[in-house]
Image (cartoon, rainbow, N blue to C red; front, side, top):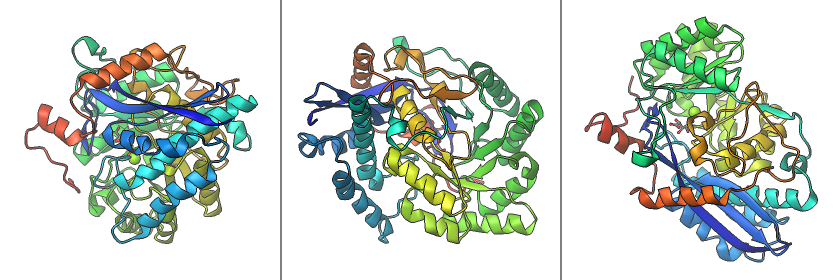
Length: 439
Ligand code: GKR
Ligand code: MG
């Protein structure tokens, strides 16, 4: 089997005005759907970051991909991702995502491109041999993968604009009671059993009150995590950790409270000195394998948040699962706005990771059926879980009419890069700037 064609579909999908310390989501998120067609008539698919930069990075690989045997991934990986890992160790090659929207670091570009190709190749191989992708990775340790209820503070609006506006399912959420209502609604619809709050938006006292409201309503059987994306100083992080000692223990965590591994290391030391072992997780300070030893040495991060889209694909997820297991660290899963192809890639990866110790993050509840490109519509969740389908490859096919609609939306919008700060200035405060730490 040889790859004969690379088809890239830049698409835009409606996205509600979700808030984080980076700003506010634009009315449309950008994604790229990748197709690898072969001489055997089988097509492999994947989904990755959108906009000009990811698109041109993938485009640049075209000559390398045409004629390639999809089973032969190692040389492509060596050429693309090992350079990226080396760069990350240069003084100039800081791959942390502290000052960037997570997933947007240009130094990740080769790793992200490789991931998109690897996932499409695994889909191809799975279809060629008649096996689901997780079984190509050595088999699954679980048939159903659990996800968390990923709560955001948000402005009113369901995403999209004009004829392409979506209903506002969750309304405005800018206080603790509204966040509890959002959570109730999401859990009712999807059955999630773990809860994540995207913080770094309201005053820390209000975010503490939100976590307490969630604990009061859902009880200790629903572990809680809060992620302010580095919006807090070390002192504030220690203060929040102290206040939420009880709520964040028992399967929860404090995610990227402040900037840098040194900062998180200090938070950890100070909390431990108070007999508070709340674990810390990161998808900001730890974004590649080269970051793991320092995170461990400083005891800054006890849980690594992986994401096949920028960690270099599904096999790297398994290596990371092994590495974190050996180092006595936990593993959870990060997400960005995405559709069903990415959801299935995450699900297959998670199914094959023995050391995955938490429910995975997903933005999927924030997207709608109108935007889904998977044939047959939205992927179902049962009791907060997605099951591995009894089909080869990723187990999903593209609905080409939906892909065409996504491409048309992309053509119509003026931007080609995620810029949450610009959205804040446009809609909330003309002088808004991302300030770290804000509190
Ligand atoms: O969608 O605004 C968002 C999130 O803040 C996302 O960009 C992050 O990558 O999910 C994220 C995280 O830091 O966990
Ligand atoms: Mg995070």
